[in-house]
Amino acid sequence: MAAGLAAVVVAAVAACSITLHAKPEVTVPTSADASTTYPIVLAHGMMGFDYMGSFAYWRGIPERLRTHGAQVFVTRVSAFNSSQVRGQQLLKQVELIVAQTGARKVNLIGHSHGSQSVRYVAAMRPDLVASVTAVAGPTGGSEVADWLNELGASYPWATNAVLSLGDFVGGRINWASDADLPQDARATMASLTTQGARAFNQRFPAGVPTAVCGEGAHEVDGIRYYSWSGIGQFYRALNPADYIMSTTHLAMKHGQSDGLVERCSSHLGEVIRDDYPMNHFHAVNQFLGLVSPEVDPPGLFLEHARRLKQAGL
Image (cartoon, rainbow, N blue to C red; front, side, top):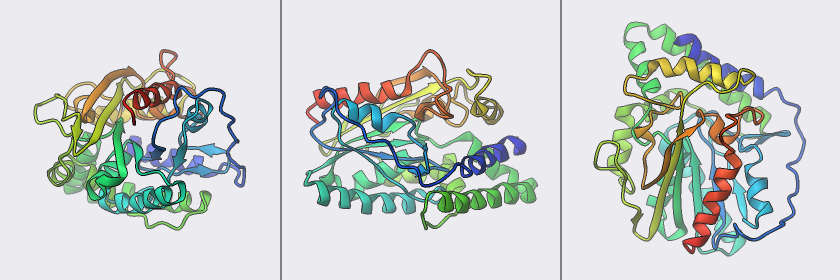
């Protein structure tokens, strides 16, 4: 397992080596069926970024949405840090987006740890948020984080080594994405454990299920809450993420997962679906679009934008 967790951060190091300075492609709208009332704001997860040269975290997703008329903003926070620090970083960007666009609110979509970021913003500034969507979000925490935390009690050197590697990867992501953000892998681990998630949920309970594997409130203080996620780890032999997720899944003790987040742990608000055939990386069309042939990740985001539009959001 230690090797598998290390592989996750090593994969990010490899991604950081992509040639820099390429610009995201300009997308020309061809329809307006996803032209939501409020802009869509994407918040990345752990080890995330916006763009590293031509390499995008949300591979092909903003482009698909914009082609169908959506106004989309891709944000950037610390690749590794606590839920609160990352949430505060996102909040500043949301306030700037609202000020620049003149929009009254935004639709927030967070992948993985980004789901805590968007929930934080909704709690701090509900007046600026129309909807919150968690994609493969660890609402109930991640058993992989639990395992790494527990490992430290018996083998502190192993946990320290993985966390040091995480801090190094965070620095590389800063360099590759032209950012200067604080990195703290230990704070990330603490936030994503079951205990850390429970503390976060007590402070920010909106949309959190009160029954085991149930749904949370669909609307709180005028904000709509949604979630979707996948199960399974290995779908494509040429995708390194599938091997990594197959390894990290070994830490799971309570049923199906996408490799990092257990199925029921991903629930928030209205659960659109929690069993898409995709792993944690596939949810954002990584790596390089080599995902399960049964799912089209950008298509799921487009479908959701249409859902938001129909709801008047």
